[in-house]
Image: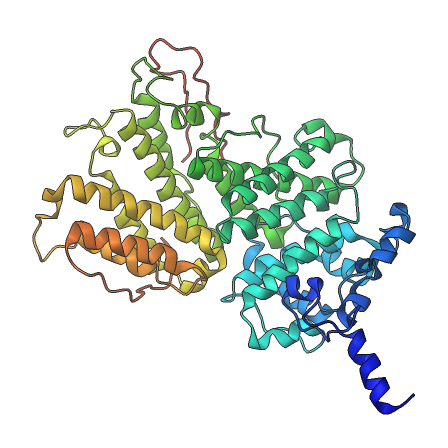
Length: 496
């Protein structure tokens, strides 16, 4: 065969553009059919392979992508256990690292790892440089979001190789949660909600929403991390339902996590603090939050909501003893929940110019915003960065409420120019939203526009932050409710 014929033969083996797999993963394709990446990642990318292989063998023959190096995975795990574990303490550190050498036996575990890596890759401010091996390391010329897209697709590929719906595991529950985290930060709210509900549904299939499942298991580690996963989903569902007016699924709580390890004591106590913040935002509150005037024709007494505001005011008394990452989450979440309760009171016509409590005043968002700016000055930037875009969304909500108040009640701005007041707080909130967290600009630009509207000045966007750190009651939702028997609250908060 002549050299020209050989060149022609090779040309026939090439495709005119990148194959579907490389194009979807946004990686370099060598243009052969099948290309090198398809051959190395899994032979199942070939149609002939699908026709020849039995579905029962797909798990046995599963191959992790060689494009994702072990070094990259380890770096992502290091970042997770340093920055994200304080607010997501649901994985056993030793077991997770040990599983890395056996991923080809478990597509379920591989999917958990790739979903976790996607969460870390989304936050370039906490992610570490990529490793020296594998094609992911060639992403240096690309945006890190390409890596996130690749990792999400890898998670789906792994999940397609196992029947996790019929045979779910705790890893399946956790990988769905991490997919929810990624998609919510990508602004795909509907897809995120589906994965959060999927995670909860699989947890319920495993009966991990029932206390008897924990008392009968012979694996204490499974019980520990299963219980923590339940409570993380409990917190997450309530926060997301409040943000998007969704109904709740996890209604009957199990026992709280137990502090078992002195090395993790501060983290788990902080986790318990977070649970306590949400314990009074169950069905009773959500039924009001999602209702309309037509749904609740009877007048409501403000007493339960005043009591809830008092609870939030005195909650998390030991917050200074928590890690700074948890302090940022707890303190901002507390202020955000105060704002949520205030908004409910506003919508139900409970606010007054002469309130019986400051929390029932039209001006209460001014106090909330003031406390947020104080938290931002006391805690380091890294504490906010570790929490990611979610914490900025809560600050944005608070800023919007303050801007609304200043638009409707402009006389609040008529204070002494020497005093720090509402105008300064709103400007500070815009600056806080300019901190170095991926995706921050969407919030900063929107709030800056609102500030321009109500203040008539262009708000500068330089971040100002400092370094350092900022009781629990029972809410009886039946108290003070007039002529209704359907308003029932969630279980009362427990002391920690």
